[in-house]
View 1: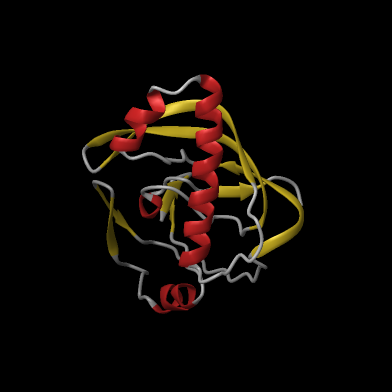
View 2: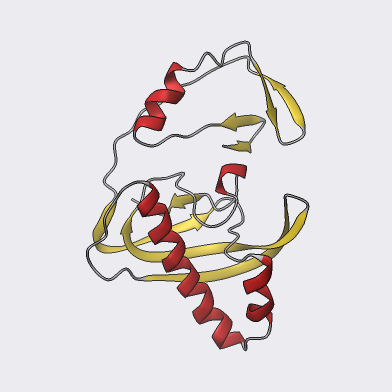
Length: 166
């Protein structure tokens, strides 16, 4: 889930999408973060998109900060040079996309390419920890649906992607 423009968005893939559509959400109260929210309106949309190898490179941007590092690997990341950090972000992008595809039970049978372009960093809180969040764009040879999330804490609204262009 994530919260945007005074509305909460719940997203499910495969069977999770159908499960969400059967939940009696209307007139319920949900705890979103630390806030109790009354559900006054429900909109359900189903889409079908190809997920997997793309014939051409695809561009995406992070709507919410991407959290690729835990506290341990962030310490080693901080000690890297700027160029090493750039390659490490690309490596983490590939790993995070592969984990997301695995979660969707999508096999990727060719070499996955991904490059992340950093726009800015932000501080993010997750489970009483301060973590580095990255905002920017990525280019990859993977076709992914809008609203797929990668990285840490995706169920708390971090790492949500949107396609750039068609």
